[in-house]
Amino acid sequence: MSADAVLDWLLDPAQPGVRYLALRDLVGLGADDAKLLAARQAAHRAGPIAEILAQMDPQGYWVRPGGGYNPKYYSGVWSLITLAQLGASLHEDERIARACAYMLEQGLAPGGQFAYNGAPGGTIDCLQGNLCWALGELGVQDERLERACLWMARTVTGEGIAAKEDKKAPERYYAYKCGPGFACGANNGLPCGWGAAKVMLAFSRLPAARRTPPLQRAIEQGIEFLFSVDPASAAYPTSAGQPPNASWWKFGFPVFYITDVLQVVEALAGLGRGGDPRLARALELVRAKQDGQGRWMLEYDYAGKTWGSYGAKKKPSPWVTLRARRALKLAASL
Image (cartoon, rainbow, N blue to C red):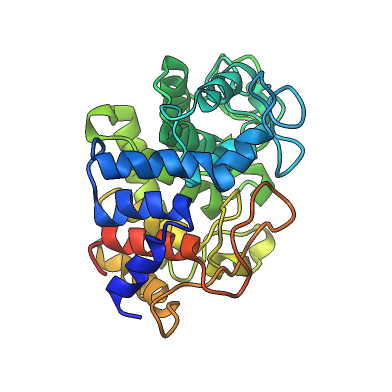
């Protein structure tokens, strides 16, 4: 396939979800374009967005009430993350607005921490980054989300956050989010590349006008962390010096707390670093994963573990192809 033929494949009306995002992110239709608005409506009425919303309780949760972390990967946390990756919008379906409001009420601690257990101590970078990104993508504009982004930024830089042992401090680190610079208890206290990618992806969607000085300082620190190794190597610190998880090199859809190199490219390109020489090998890796017809395979999936179906593993995937082409376009290297 030529590049135009691959784009035609992504624009097939038989897959309305992919078509909508391709028109928005690859063709570049304006937000008020009638063709784009019709495609957005179609994407919400059929396919995985509609399937996920059909499973939602009228109150705004999936499977069971509460903060929404369990059961993986059907509950509210994962449903909202998936909906955001599918291009869902609260402006298109009131149920999405209800679900976002429910998450802010049930899953967000007063200090701005998204937590697996509803308490500040249940916060962790991958969850914080995923939900800050997802709620923003879904269209949330709420002071509580701003507070969550500020907490996330300050935990990167350490500004005003006490050590986890200082249990009398009004704001401190915890067992999982245990220190500045993406330190994670699940990674033996070392900085976590997976968590960093989620946090930086969330920051990448914020327009420049909303990047306050604390957020900008966190962004600069995060960029340097992601470039502290060659992103193509994914050689970020690991517990007990283990080699990087093989999932780094398996591009997938949807993407939850496990991260791939493509998501690091998405984050850095979204932050304007697509032309940085330090990203060159990662971009080369992304391009090299195309098949002979210019498509990308689904190498990692959650088939049978979450709502929706996103294609066959080890087969050309419109969802992964969309991710790759969008990242390469952001990096101005396609």
